[in-house]
Length: 279
Image 1 (cartoon, rainbow, N blue to C red):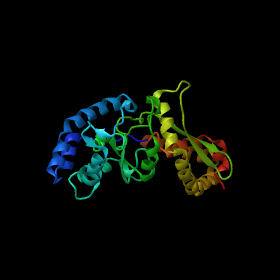
Image 2: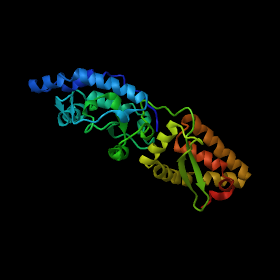
Image 3: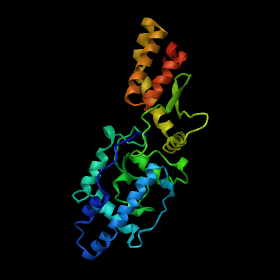
Image 4: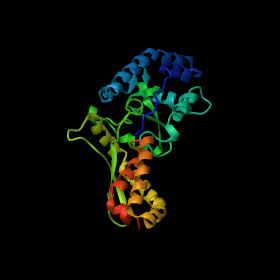
């Protein structure tokens, strides 16, 4: 759930570079004939994405009735993705846009490929549009295959258009049992805002509670010795102070990381700070 910089490469430049080395001149000319249509469609995509209404774009099995889905898929897979092909430089550039090589959809796993926000099988016109291609991990890419929004509030977070870094939405609660564990959730207002509704859809679709809880369990094991030492020396207050300082540090780095949510929850749990970390 991280925002990343929107690509600046023009879709026509990307498309023309991709098709530049097709040897079949007739096929190449057919592809060139849809350039303006791709540009106009991508311009419309930008408008829809900015207004959270990508769901309203109609799927299609071809591009302007001229180029088939399979032909556009061929352009993507053999000219943009394939190494030593003219479009590969854009593929690599888009992958490198991910901060610290982390998937912006889950914020945790390592980027392995590009994901089409709108799938190329249903929206072939956006097969090589940079703004429809986001760096993603293998798991998130696979999960998104089943995703089809039907309204604004069922759209997932778009890394190029949605920035949630201004406030904390991701929180956690401590399961006060031995061994302790954490439950992650999206905290919403009494009347849910649009971004909160979409965050919940995103959080549930990508099964982020399972992912973050697993990482939190490992983190808890790693900090047990330090917390035990603090507790023996200065009691609960020193443990709580340490956890709160860690929360502040994580908060300044990323308000919506699982570590931010985890350390906030731990610092607020008197049970955990007073020995609940011992297991």
